[in-house]
Image (cartoon, rainbow, N blue to C red; front, side):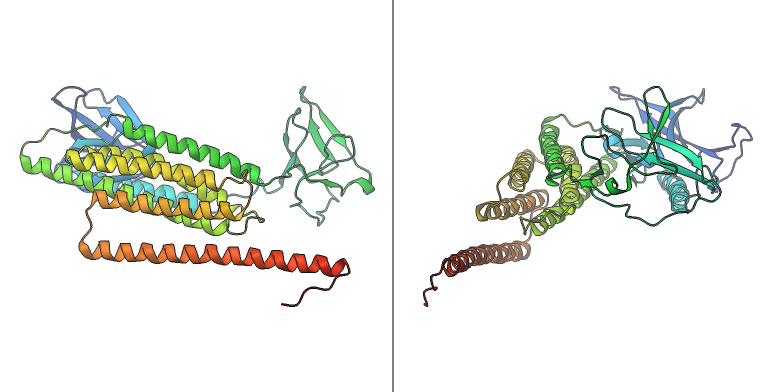
Length: 434
């Protein structure tokens, strides 16, 4: 292992076999890298410091490329290789040939721990540590700017209790919106001048609800997630970008392939679990169609953030599978994307609420579960016991869904009968006794 420890001025080279995590150090580790498009390995230096991971030229010490540590999603080590996964920040994995993969992982883990501890520290008070500073912010009309200004609380001014979480915008009839602040609200004109406005006491509490449909934000989230479904389908059609390292024997090659298969399977299973949980949450939180739950948008966004990664991981995993199973896996994933598209259209609040819509949502969620299980079974063929348990579990779940739908229909029928009897009573007629 060749390790250099540099301080802030890139000097004082030391020779030591013990890895020390120092916030002011740069660790350079020797490794072999395969040239793009050639079967040739060239020496490089892998640099790790408190901010990023770097590819460094061995001779000139020039930084060829760097990745911030915040972009490192996971890493994997073997006897002769070290692989980094940067998630969406890079297509494919970055794999190098080195026997010091464990030590590189320790370096990265140590610096990531430092970053996590710093973020966990309590934020400083005030602006740039000034406890006496305040921030004035006011929302103005869309045609004007939003002013954020710093100021000082003068002597004799005290805080007053009030409602700060009012829904909507404070307005006066046929005038611009107003807000509150120290010595009146401050509005920023295009020229940068400050204008102060004041309201009559009787006009200060008039609230105009400008957001008649809170589901409007949910509709935007659903549309963005539908685009993610299309992106996942496109990922399945693209050519995989896998850099194959140079192997000296078949054992090393088989071991590397097994590691890549394991990594991609874990990624797919992890994301399928997250999307399955999000689907169940959407079904639960949309049970009462007259009420709006803002958590629905968060659950749908979870589906949109994971689905393109599923397509990417399935595409890479399929390259290591036989031709028949490869086609089955891609086809199952494509059906899963279609099921998610149907589910998103079913829960769209722009569609009129009805009993039939709820039935459509439950049916679409059931298809999502079926195709998710099909993807998992295609990656790893289940045993007889697993198949038996899954089939019976799915059948029980379908029975519950069917019973729930029948209960809802019965409730609607009873409610209509009660309303009809009430109308006859108000009209002067007595309800007919059964």
